[in-house]
Image (cartoon, rainbow, N blue to C red; front, side):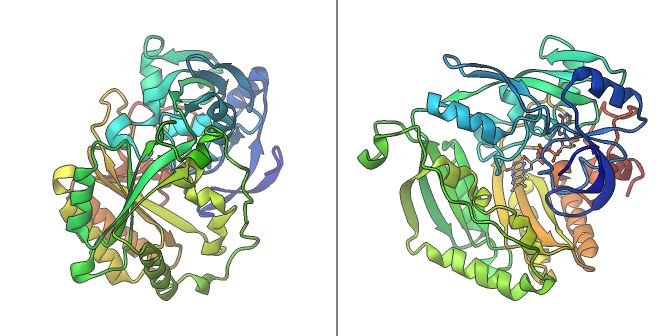
Length: 438
Ligand SMILES: Cc1cc2nc3c(=O)[nH]c(=O)nc-3n(C[C@H](O)[C@H](O)[C@H](O)COP(=O)(O)OP(=O)(O)OC[C@H]3O[C@@H](n4cnc5c(N)ncnc54)[C@H](O)[C@@H]3O)c2cc1C
């Protein structure tokens, strides 16, 4: 996107779309002018949130805040500007044996966005959210003042900003701690589960694994509800790596990246094609369990392998609905959610189930609660708001909440865990929706 001109701006779901100027600067003085001269400002990283969280009246894009400030190759501490992407960090850190402590399902996320959403990965039950590896950041507040924030300095702003969805100011740069790895590979096991009881049991049995995630066929009904495949993994050590991979353990070959060249017509994704996809995905694994070594890109970022895959949902776009249900009611809640989806016929061909561990009480704006979280993609159509409302009711009934960074139409009451971020000039479309109670 070209900065500083009026243009259509939208996030990963291509819904909603606004026509606004996207301002981008790389000097603190110019960013300060922008903040002081506008009443409503919101920061935007790489637009990988799905809905309206980084859209607003005056959008500040961090695209030009893309420089590294320092990288200590001995202890894995890295400092960079907030527009640097996780993919940029991995490119320089993996060859030195360092990996992100927590990574979401795409590496095309900026550091600012990772902090503002306090993103989680497949290891929340074991290693928490992104903020666990965050040492400090610099934030421009509504007066144009730059604050250094950490657990010891401006700690109140530090914690409000983590998961604060850009509503406390613009993160300019950050320092994070990376974790040590011996190889760029993951020792993975994929296990098929025939139903919800089995997949919940597999999650329980896999609590000692660092990474767990399940793909789930959300169109199954009756005794097959919850049919899924659990993937669990560990960073492979040098000793256990097969000799063919051990020659160059920290280097991955560059892969060709196919792209979706245009928006698919609306009819391409429908209940039938989603059913077909789900059948093929479940049956491509022939045995109950498969054990192998795969590179970190394939394990963590399978969706990044196809550029612009979001276009398959067509021009009207799609939403991602991600909720968490507390652990003790997890199975019951998921059953109700999956039944509602299967009966609606509004299939999601991407449905991902994960386990969250205990949340850090200091990071009060972070989305996770101890329990199960399910993320589903739905094409935007006339029936969607009704389905979302039905799902919202179930989430509310089971004491759950909605992930703000994916949200664009949920009930405000499910997103009201956000605190100490109001009454500022940093305002997004999402924030306005929440305040208005929509
Ligand atoms: C394919 C895919 C998979 C994903 N998987 C996961 C997952 O597994 N786990 C997970 O947690 N998330 C996941 N996400 C969501 C994504 O990680 C978050 O939405 C993330 O915040 C996007 O970062 P961004 O840089 O694109 O920021 P944007 O999308 O541009 O903005 C997101 C939020 O961050 C704020 N923000 C951005 N930059 C700054 C800044 N410099 N200062 C202050 N506020 C800022 C914005 O105001 C907005 O509220 C996924 C997204 C996609 C597309």
